Length: 150
Image (tube, rainbow, N blue to C red; front, side, top):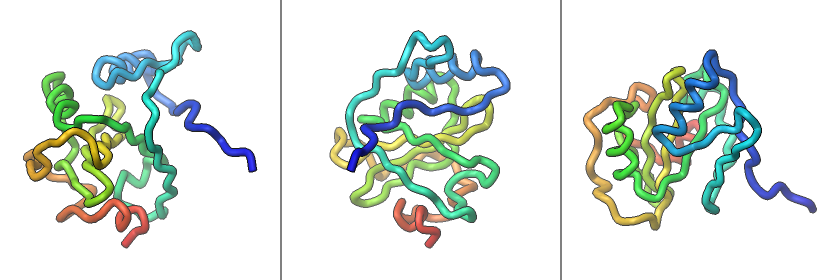
């Protein structure tokens, strides 16, 4: 059976595509393909393809898709984003055997996720940022139980 070899692009609507593309490049290092002359060269690694139940509270119901960006050092990325004025949208969540997660919203209000897979550089995983996560609404659950709606 022939298979796809990876994600070739993520396309989404924006009221101000140029401004939003500049924000992603400034804060996350993701270059846009708005002019079709640049592409973001990402590193090889795992990608999760996971349909969530319609009633999942893992991201806002009005948001049909959430992009998860893989990072090698979540603490360093958190520090960089916060230094740039980007505020986390909840606490850092750790799921045993899956990794660590942090959530943010872009200037358009779209929630996205940063993921540090297990085996990434050692970090202070017990440290949580002092922000409540209104979407998780309580103690951290495993990523798998969130995806399955349990």
